Image (cartoon, rainbow, N blue to C red; front, side, top):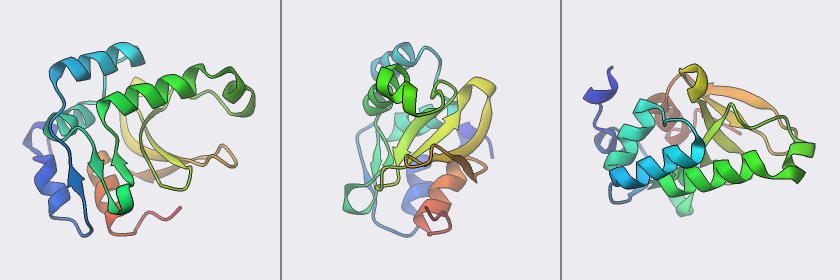
Length: 147
């Protein structure tokens, strides 16, 4: 399925569970996010944010963060000197969501890989959880991804 053919809000709304869509991200917001990150957002994530600048799951869980939060969280994780002493580098990862337990979900945009990984905050492991953003959404909302 091509990124341009996906209507993200329809895909997510058709999945089980309660979700709250935010208003679309502005092009300025996406450009600011790209500038802070130092690289572009993956096409599917950017397309999703153009439809909904963040999606909340049940109990306010960050199913997809806003462009502003993506920029802020990644900037903090990549630049915090104390975190650098505790964990492997975060530079290859693009965090875009949280599991609600301290673990985070990430893409690998610098190598143009569509897979989604979960970062475990307790042991610093990075585990493959889905082959794409669309499958992450489906599998997370249907309970196939368990952390």
